[in-house]
Length: 193
Image (cartoon, rainbow, N blue to C red; front, top):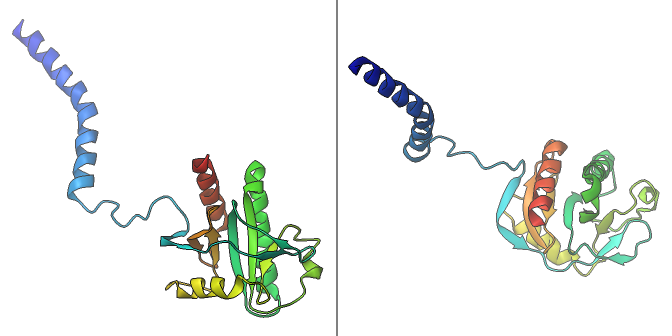
């Protein structure tokens, strides 16, 4: 009789420990070790903290040069220093593909090219329809350049993300995997709803 009671208690204790041991181990790892301390989160880009307010920007549509707006949309931004060379064309293509890959959410994302030089974008207007640009003829240009250059980790070859409220909030290195950017934007749009 005692033997059966003891065996039943041991079985009960064994079953309880199956559930309790993982909880105790995770509690120990989180509070008493450096487990995942260096983990920056699930985002693929680098979060800019604190965010940088850019305000309302006067931008132009690549199709016809008309003044346009990027307000209330997530915006991918990249820089071109001179004429649009292969790097520039690759970036135009990449940000367009990132936007298209978002599927039904693509209308919530815009693309902005910041050009250091006034130039004609006509040859790209059909292929990269919907692309926006800003250059030295825009009222917003000087202020925008200053805010980017004041950011200590500014990289001219990187891609940046502006939120719908006009805050610069993420940076992606020039060699970043576009799939990571897509996942980040999908997550941001989903959490915005």
